[in-house]
Length: 81
Length: 81
Length: 150
Length: 150
Image (cartoon, rainbow over all chains, first blue to last red; front, side):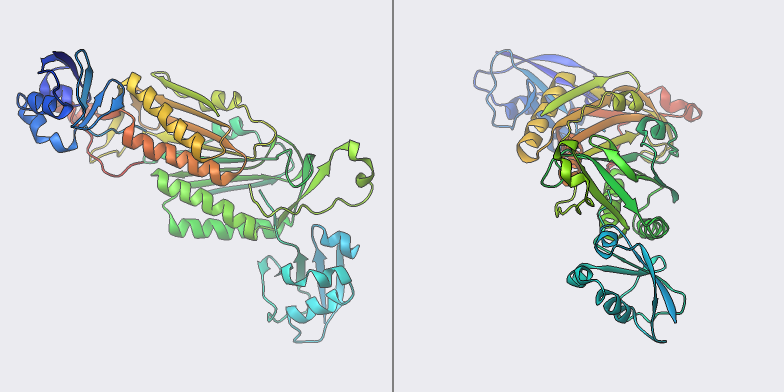
């Protein structure tokens, strides 16, 4: 199944990408997707512990099970205000 | 010696007075003046424990020694804002 | 620390006050408090509060509080306006602006100032009851007995 | 609880926002926070910050925070404006208004909202360096690494 992955802030720079479609096995977790994407972008790998992960408009943790068509967002700590 | 005593807020109502000049012995304390004035106004007497006392523009305690010509203020708890 | 203290019977014009803000380029936070007269201040509904100040002492006590703030927080500027005389329900009686590099100091200083003001600055308020309450307007207005601050 | 959330590239016009305040007669406190871009944000002097939002999620996360405030404090109304895009030094990037019966709740809710926003609302900022720093403008702007909030 496929999910869309979007990057925000300087994650766009270190991946050189705003958005990509990732193919994952059925039942894959958000953590597995994160590892799969991070394996391709070494700088993203280095930031794994501080990376925030969302599905749709809600934060989700690594064990969240993804659905086909989910929109996943990966981004660094937020800095509003 | 003489000191001026001013009342504020509803202390003006319960004494029927804004300002009076009080004669006190040399070396008298603010506490002694307060008692002398309160003896004349029973409702002021009842409020002695919550009364705030100032000399000039500074709060002073009962043991503060008064000087001739001092301006003393007696008032209830403040309520600004 | 810049200080601007106003005790006045004039209405508090917040937009005009905002228009006069001075904020240097290293400042990141402006905190404002507007205290407004409530219709249900005290047990009865009122139409206004009547504020009285021992103004000379009030000014001195405010300055002492400003001194304490200056010693405790890196505040660039404080402006405070306290309206006295009659202030109708829904109108501001108090306006405070605190400007600081960061928000934590600005919030702390602003709250400290208001808390301490209510403890030491000689200003009092009395309710102005509604006309329909007739008789009570003839006698002196009763003191406002409320323990809960705004 | 009334809520008004604005995420916009337009400048934040505080006097105009004040002019639209709705405050019912039982409300005694309005607390405001204005967050302003600082020249010395981060290690270098900057001329502006560039704010980016994941807007759909930001709106949702703000609403979740408003829900929490509504459950915890008797707040009548919250208005929040976050400017995005380029915001020059000395200009506001954030404006918050909290209206409540008493000041303690208004201050607590306002501070909670800003603290939590900085933890969960997906908005980021990047410094826009001065032109004199030349070369750095060619590459991507570095992330702003500052632990100390405003």
